[in-house]
Amino acid sequence: MTPSPRRAYDAALIVAFIGSALLFVVPQFFFIRQSLLPNVAPGVVGDSMSLDNYAAIVTDSFYLGVFVRTLALSAVSVAAGLLLAFPTAYFLARIHSRVVRGLIVLLLISSFVSVVVKVLGLTLLLGTEGPVVRALRMLSFGFWDVRLLHNDASVAIGLVQYTLPLLVMILFGVIQNVPVSLEEAALVHGASDWRAFRRVLLPMLWPGTLAAALIAFNMNMGAFTSAVLLGGGRVLTVPIMIQRKIILETDYPNAAALSVLLTLAVVIVNLAALKVRPITAFASTRGG
Image: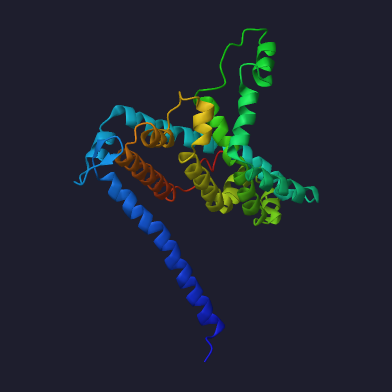
């Protein structure tokens, strides 16, 4: 007897799940095991397992500062990205024009452009002799003397550029699923634009917006190219520290421990964010 299409479909799903699980679990097992071993010499790993690598990281103020900086840059970049992406996605989702399809295609194409190419463009724009700095000098009558490269601000700008197309595309799809008639009904019944957004639109968009924010945050936490090129070696994030441990110090156990802690930090932030709910009832009597 030939198997039914349903059984064949279930079997294919099981095979795909097992294959994906093996590709994820097996490397992670050796990855975590490596983090428990001592680094006895450059490129030489010992046999005894312990938590010394983790203890050395969590008790060192330098490493803690690197983690705090990575978390802060990722969170600030997500907030800035949402502020830019949400109005753009809302405008694209609410206008009825054939141009929208072309703009979405352009966004999709831009998201596939190499990060190195994007960062190179930012480097030319934000450089000391770039058009942005020249314009600021002209507007400040020559008093502008602030560097826009090789600092936290330039890395944050790079992270926003890195995730912005994805944020716009995700939010565009989320907003499109909310009928315009709901907003119009709220306005007809006397709600202001802000109150209609806060009490009607935001609760419906919150799950999708939160998912988009977490995806961007996760990407930022693991971003390396933007941080290393725009930071110029002055802005140390966890991915940069991992790269230095592997390439410069050949300290594989410490690099593995940093990677595990970075993964744990991302998981904890994601789990905590799932508990966050939008405030929709605040100041309900203040005529928002």
